Length: 146
Image 1: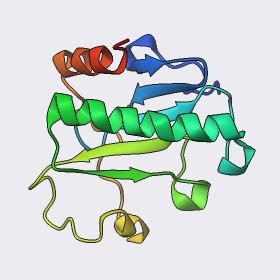
Image 2: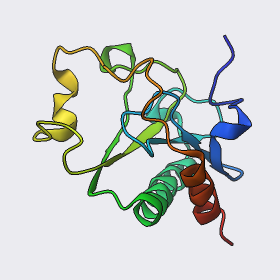
Image 3: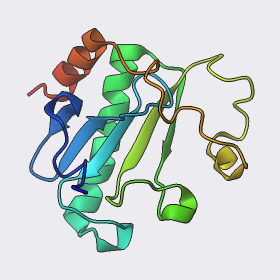
Image 4: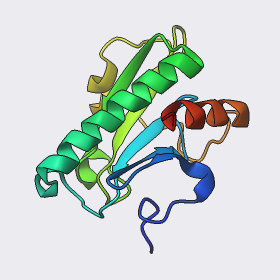
């Protein structure tokens, strides 16, 4: 199966340069859920070179800044799933940037720590949390300002 992050659909790309891409998550946990992905196919953090490490974190910062301006979320979850046991479903390193909104879940306490709860991800297969196209275009504009 071809890597969906090496050859993503154009409509999922909101930013791209020579080192990273910022993509819309195909199964978003919340509206605005983005993925920051190194362009080079790599499966783990240890394989990143120093420039890629810097660019990956710069991409996270860019994503947060654009999401704050476009969607005005109340907070963020930022995380990386490394390996199948941690929930990684695509074997290409990627950082999740998930905007959070007051009231988007009943019990936000614990944040990312809840990843180890024995509960099925109710977002897989859902499309109702996909970002409206007008906001996708706003994000593209914000991320690609020169």
